[in-house]
Image (cartoon, rainbow, N blue to C red; front, side, top):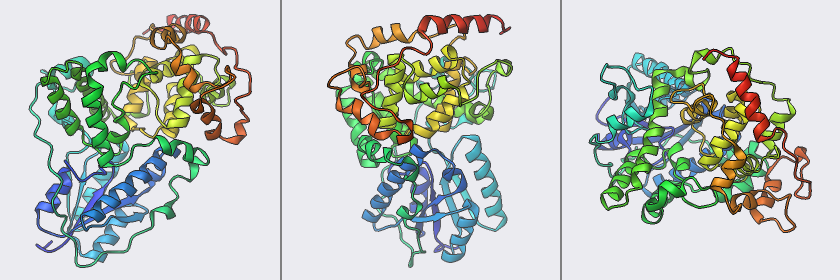
Length: 473
């Protein structure tokens, strides 16, 4: 490494220029910076919707870099092999990246860091994707938090440095290495015709994410506590999509929330709590990596959940044809927009795992295929929370009634009308768009009769409680 040897800035889920510790450090070094994105095996293994949405984020970052007279180099293949080849091509002496906290990414990064150092290359990782590094938040006894509320109380008043500014200049190398063409990767191919439907609901890139945060703080955070639970109202921030790809930093969101709270917008504290709930998922994934693939509470391992995805009830759940309106509306929202209202996520998860007695992994994997805001840590924790097998979980004996939940949170049925077409002579455009997004092989039409419930709310609850009573929790 010399004063003029380039730094490879390896972007992953931090696709922005502002408040970026790794990028700022690289630029401050005075050495040339070569931004890189690698479409490695781990990324290629993601679901259809996340890969498609990731491609949009990569494109937006690439444009932002061009505006800074820089360039994003794209390579496909094993991450270490791609980095090694780029090092040979450019004479780079360092690789910088932002840390990730899910077990797959951690294993990859640990392996690559060791290999690069063995090759004599400086490999430096920086805080990324979280407010507080998982090893910096401890209980009084020195362990990690297994319950959310005490963690919130611990970090609530912690000082957090201000967000870093966007680098004024990204030093360029004398010559650029070759780059793949993004469209050659065909990252949206598996979306099929649904791609053209979902794309209109995407809010892509750093500028759009910052604008989205600003609009939320200015117009919606004041009524956040109430409106965030009403799926027919635009009452949430919508930032999960942008946080997923690092188009905005959680630190920027945190400081904006605190500014709003100090300005007298008391509901901003609920928004801050949601940021820490997201944080809780990363801390758990770091300390107990089994949460992303196994029951966090091991005494659930013997529970007789159904897992055969050929079952009619699982197919009906995936297709939004359970006959339970809240469940079906939420599932259809996901297929059209790539996202789902948080209240809907709780209802569809409870219905699958409790009313239908199906394994939470079935739902987790389907969400991983369909959500543009998919995140391995948040997705896993959310599903285990709903199923009862996870940390801080909803009690196993609590079974959401999707009918009374609809009466409570969608009294006027605005949400149902928006997403279910079969019951109406003149269905909404959003409801009809579901049939334009789904696979043709499903052979569904807005002219179909709406189904009777495959399992009623009362019957499903009774069956779930009987199964729970036979287990020793």
